[in-house]
Length: 420
Image 1 (cartoon, rainbow, N blue to C red):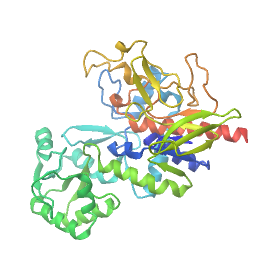
Image 2 (image 1 turned 90 degrees about the horizontal axis):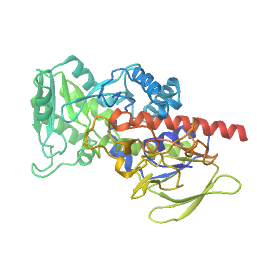
Image 3 (image 1 turned 90 degrees about the vertical axis):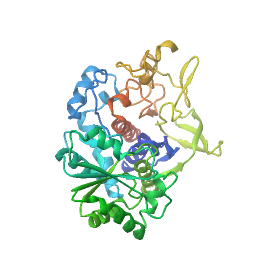
Image 4 (image 1 turned 30 degrees about the vertical axis):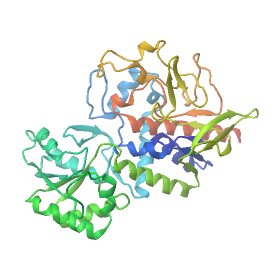
């Protein structure tokens, strides 16, 4: 049983199904919508120094040496690389190809005109990295009414270092000039060929020799590659997407892809369901009660992988007496006193101790108590619920989720093989 449907839960479910295990998964897939769509491995380290890293593997070696209790330290670099490659290979098979460099991060434009380093990007964003590197003639397109994206801000931020960067603003054909435009509505509109042609025509008058055209990430949900190719043909320029603020279409694409394709692998999926109760059975394994708004049915599972996330995912619950794990009441590594959760300023260089709270595990990703004893021999954990990491400040969210899911599933498969 995989509990959770964020990136860690989805990756664990995929890896377990590929291992030939019978998998039941439950969780709220809405969390994936908040994903930017780019896959960070390790972009900043050490976080206190805010040191941006081009080589994530070099940074990873430093992290493992300095922080032996970090979840990354539970895995060899080759295992982390294999985990990321396995996920992206699967996504390519189901129509969501990703690109990146083998041994270095990709530099990517953000919707506010800054740049970030990330390990893998959707293929639809790849040309943007090339345009940025070459400082090639490029047009960034604003859509009237689309919130959370400003081509003008991007050009003003980057213009001094990129003289051939221009901006244009267009209205989305067939919609009112007034009022907000929602990314999902634009994305679905662009999946209609006639609307797509009108959209391209509105942009074409502004291209004026630009070799690249950047757009907010709204190029469809199911037909992104086809839409991208059509726009490039109409505009006679390379077209690329720029990530938008969450909830993002790039996250929706991942959610839809996982929901549609994981059941094809034999996964018994209960998306939009919560696990309300989980109890160990005397003979081993667990009985779990799940449903949408209340317990509706039960599942018997030989083993459980907990990937419920932190506070937003409700895997961890903060209370006046401390931080609690919500389902199994597992021990939580955390500061001794609540007044030690936070530093004095929001952007404190050392970060906040509460960000590193979570479930401690052994080398097999099995939760342990304060003295290092395994809590239950058939229980595992993966993802942001794990202790001793600060994925936000180190830009390592997807890498942490996928790598720990890989390690936990490998340990489960080995345990199953040994016991059978």
